Each structure stands twice: as C-alpha cells, then as structure tokens.
Image 1 (cartoon, protein in one colour):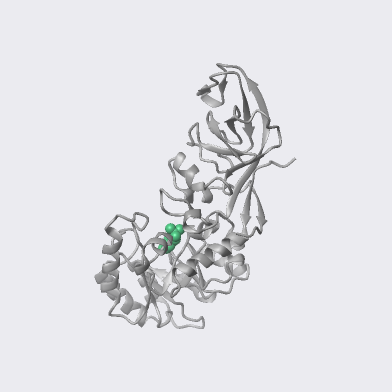
Image 2: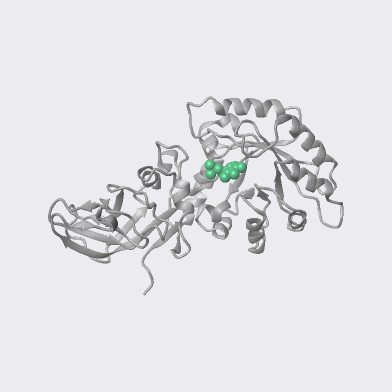
Length: 364
Ligand SMILES: *Cc1c(COP(=O)(O)O)cnc(C)c1O
C-alpha cells in the first residue's frame, strides 16, 4: 500500500493568483518566478498552468533547459545568470534571457563571438542595497556599455535590482533602494524591474515595466503577520494525510522520541503519516495546529521522519483513515511557518520527492 501523505495543487488558484498580480500591477508585465521546482509546486506544472504570463523566472540554466525541453516557449529569465562559456552557448541556443550581476559574467559576454546563435537579452542587476548579487552603480554603467558592445547580446537590456526589506512596511530601506534605482536608471531608455511579491502588494511605486512575483503566485503572503487570503490570494498547495492509528493512552504515558511530551490524563492520541521525511518542519512545537476532519487539534511530542502525533481529547470520535490537513485549505501555511519559526517559502519548497502530488481544479 502506498503512503497516505500527499499534496494537492489547485491549478485554479494558481491562475487566480496571477490574475491578482495583474490587478495590482496593471501597467507592468509579469515574470512569474518558478525557481526551486516552482516553490515546491512542480516547475513544469506551474509553467503549464501559468502560460498566460509574459515570462518565467528560474534560478539556473538547468531549470531553464528543463522548461524548454517540456515545451515552454515564453521568455525565460535565468536569475543567477551564467557561470561558464558553455552556459552562454546554451542560453543562446535555447533563447534564454540571462541576468548579469558580476564582472566575471561580463567577461564571459566579452569573450563571446557573433557566431550562428542568436544574441540573448540580458537583465543587468544593480546592487541598490541588498548587498548580495549585483553591480555597484559605478560598475553598472561599465556593465551596460560592455553588454552594448557584445555581439552575443541584444540591444534591449532590462535594468533590475532586488529589494531587501519589501516585506517590512515600516522599513525605510525599500524607499532608499527605489530612489537609488530611479537615480541610476532614469538616464537610460531601457525597461526596468524591481518588485518581488511584497513590493507588488505594498509598494506600487516600485512596479516599473516588469514585476517578479514568486510566493504570491502560490497564494502565500510574504508578510509575517498576515495570510495570503487576506491579500485576495488563494492557497495553491494543501498538504494532506490520514490518521494511521488512534491510541488510548494513560495519564503519565510519554509520546514519541525523547519522551518529551507526557499525557496529563487518560486520553486519545492520533498518529498521522506525515513527518520531516515528507517536509513537515521538525521544529514545529507541541501546540502547532493540525486539521483532523476539518477541526484543529494540537501537535504533541516530537515530529518524526514519517509521523506526527496529535492530541485528540476534543475529537474522541475520530477513527483511523480520517482526513488530515497539515497546511493549505483551512489551515494557512503562514501559521504553521510561524509556529515552527520559519517562513512559508521554506515549507512549500521542502516537500520531498516521496510525497505524491495530485492536481485539482477548485473554483476560487
Ligand atoms: C526569488 C526572486 C523573486 C521572487 O520573490 P518572492 O518574494 O517569492 O516574490 C523576485 N526576484 C528575484 C531576483 C528573485 O530571486
């Protein structure tokens, strides 16, 4: 018998969330970000469902090649860019857009010749304060000149940068980064891109020509104290399982590894087939909510590889086989992430390969 852990992917919700992006940024085109296997939702599936987008964004050449091999014809932006001459050749052959963020990468462009393959479009990345990838403003002018002189590059680069604190509405950093970006780019006639999901939702002045939504496409908010539903988004992933055992334990019985949780009274305890081997966060503490038959019950004991245990005192009638939701429909993944002191991005990306995936289309 196969394990009962599975995730449901609601394709209608994906389409709805893209529509929501377009409502919020009506004058921008959309690069749908589907790196990390579509944030754990299946990169090819997400690309197929979101074919109404203007472009896709992935982290690496490998992910881009996988998309081209599966028949994706839209522009694909490789956010990490290229790290070797053959990657540039692949980018040209597969018509990929590449981000250029370092002098090593401009050197690779300089070394390229105008041979048979078509030139690629580059997205030149400025560091406006995140201090991860990107050119300092002075170097960025040189990078733009270099791209202009390069036979392997088209004449219409996009100028982009990435925001460090867009998910903090009270932070001054976003406005500082925007001002820097504006000052640098306004002298050029090129298209511009700055906004991730948080900026699409909270900072309309950052939208420019291309927005780059990731997490919000999956129905999840980037803001720590909210849920996607409150932003007009619909959760796409629901992680599901079943009860595989119901035990009647006695007061004083300890549950799970480390015997760290002890029954305060005689009580029913449920065992659910979903553990950290499936992507449930191992650090979720006792009290983290789990839905059993649509009702919240608290996690107890430690999370194991294949199982978790829950307190069924409020649900004495439940039976083996009853339905469980770990997060998604009826239980926001944002809430589970908060309980486990992580972010919802990590939870959805962390679903492991052994978990079955079932596509559903449920009206939003
Ligand atoms: C991942 C990524 C995004 C999307 O970020 P979200 O917070 O998921 O919307 C946008 N731009 C770049 C450069 C990224 O790497």
